Amino acid sequence: NRIKFRDQGNWDHFQRLLLDAKLLTRDRWGKLKVNEKRVAALLALTAVHDIMKMEIILPKLQDEHAPFHGYAAHDTIGDHDIALAYVMDHFPSLLPSFHGLRKEEQASVHFTQ
Image 1: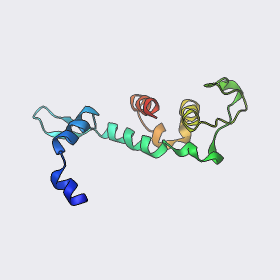
Image 2 (image 1 turned 30 degrees about the vertical axis):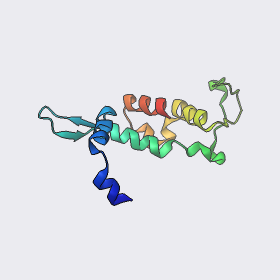
Image 3 (image 1 turned 90 degrees about the vertical axis):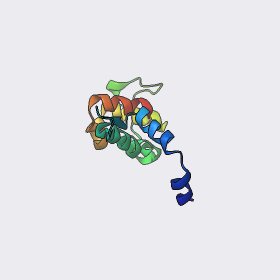
Image 4 (image 1 turned 60 degrees about the vertical axis):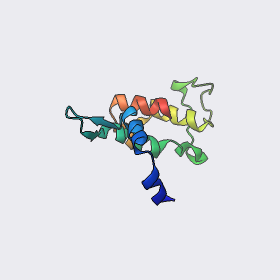
């Protein structure tokens, strides 16, 4: 249960995970700081990761982008991960939470999706 998790969880390991993921950093005095740009990237990934599982929004490959990961022009990209990669590559403004990230964070989200 939640109380047991709070009381018995290994918080040092969890903190290490957040530091390793660069979601938290330490300032020069050792104080923990939230890396807001990295957290925004994680939230963007969470927001967009599985949206292409909705078949109604799967993209059709445009002529000028063909071929793309085995898909030909006019194909509907049926693999949700490839469909998302296609939109991220060619139409990032359709994903505002992704589009608003810096290029470095976009690359990180694109890689992990």
